[in-house]
Amino acid sequence: MPPFLRSILFPSLFLLAATNAFGQPGVKVENLPNFDLHRFHFGFHLSYNTSDFAIDLDPQSPFRDSLLVLSHAKQPGFDLTMLASLNMNPFLSLRFSPTLSFQERLLTYAFAQADNSTKYFQKPVESTYLQFPLLLKYRSARINNFAVYLLGGGKFSIDMASQKDVNNSLDDEVVVKLDKYDYAVEAGGGMDMFLTYFKFGIELKAAFGIPNLLIDDGTRFSTPIDRLRSKVWVLTFTFEG
Image (cartoon, rainbow, N blue to C red; front, side, top):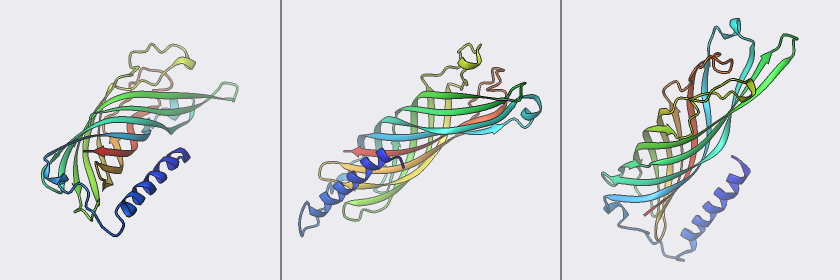
């Protein structure tokens, strides 16, 4: 976990624990006792993401191309999310959370040159996704002001910063083009803490893209790749009323 993320997460957990432990000395108060009686809840998410690719290389590429190595590295980003939740019963709810997600991935290529040297290229792939996740949330029974839960579902994404129509002409300026649309399965889990005025949650989830996003426009950066799919991990702080 990145140091700056630890500096936010651990003090937050300590503060919440201290609030629950010392807010009412000697008395265990159940906060928001009627929370589960309301059919609809609304809130927002603040999220830290690390996005990456799942890449399958063309098995014929080594025989017709000078590519030596293609590596991919995950990069940090963040999400802003609105949340609407429909409680179907005290333990099961349906969540719709339209999200603006800022993601970046880094591709590094090494090509063999005619003089036996190696030339390297780094290609950052940036996306600004408008996402529409629909998830089922299965929550445990409350233990005082605490509960845990599991999530599962899918999402549809539109890349608002897609460069699929860029004219690639020079190696140093070539971009790796991705399809504008993506859909993925998503799963994760977390914990809910019922505070005095709102419910605070921490969750970790992963999304795995299904379609091949690569647009093969014939450049030496796209031709060696057979399939390229999205892969994202998201740490989320939830505020729900």
